[in-house]
Length: 59
Image 1 (cartoon, rainbow, N blue to C red):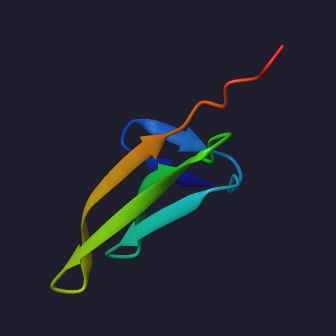
Image 2 (image 1 turned 180 degrees about the horizontal axis):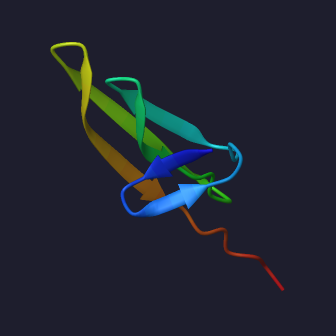
């Protein structure tokens, strides 16, 4: 079981789990398309930049 903020998860889900000080502090869940950029500062995650794409389907 892990706790992120006020939410508790009974199992680890697919995604990127950011652990700091031995605790899960955030979870980046997978998207259909896109990318996440993780910036580090002094050995810890400092910020995350998220982008998401949409595919346009031709009819």
